Image 1 (cartoon, helix red, strand yellow):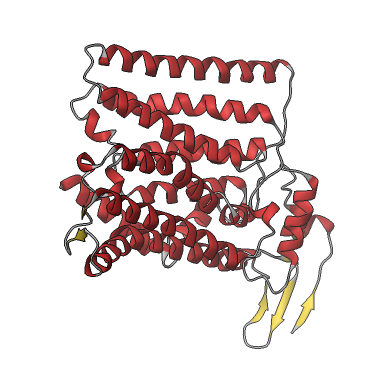
Image 2 (cartoon, rainbow, N blue to C red; image 1 turned 180 degrees about the vertical axis):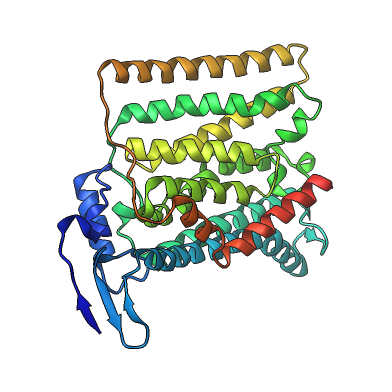
Length: 390
């Protein structure tokens, strides 16, 4: 093949050098680019050419190097990792738990499951132990799998340098606002208790639990499970997706978090909380901000279900005061931070952008149609539809 170059500098394209992700730090930017330059890295988006350069191919004639083709190649590979990880999580929820219960039942443990239901029955402590163990496997395996495949340095895969501690406070405030907004439409409906059933994901008969089981599962649900979800969706996968800009990574993360709920009633909250978690993580510079957002959301929903489950005559008043207080506190804190920042005219650069001739919507379309992500997405939607009908 023979290249015929035309050399205006404005037509030179180098997607690695042109992309600036120093929104975290210059050291982060350097390490991220080093990871992308590794030729043996199949998940790095690399493209360097001159827009006006043509290449002669003996069989196809003159061709222009295609940045779009390279985008599609890398996006498909990243979405394959995400799709396989999500498929494992769905499988863990629907099959592994049931299989574990059946195996333990054969070994003499008082725990049982049926073929046509994900519900587990038996001695409370055994059931809760299996539920927690399966949930841990569900969360840890995708983290290990995606981390092993991408091989990102830990400090790059998991943002760890705090750029703005104020943004961590702002993240908590925004989460309180979001929680109240999401809960308001159902808080005053007859189905409020069902929607806020905190333990419905356990697939067990919660009324048979004792205090020990209740506390154990609550602690894992509030502190551990959100941590695992964030390490998966906002860790190395998020960083790799940033190669196509932060908005692209945020949208993919939001959509995946939404689908994994497999519940139409929970999807609006998942979208909003995932959006706040991702944006405030980028603004603060640390993944711990995303963890805090998810933990606050879990604590809020837990507090709300406890208030709604109260038999006190003042239950409605207490619940309303709780929601109003959270909304007002969040609005005051976030509003104060916004006006102080605006008064100081501080226009910091937080979001890394990626520009190419490919329409951003088209890139998202490529991601949505990637195998096996599309199949898993349809599976999640089908399960959500079944829950809605039943």
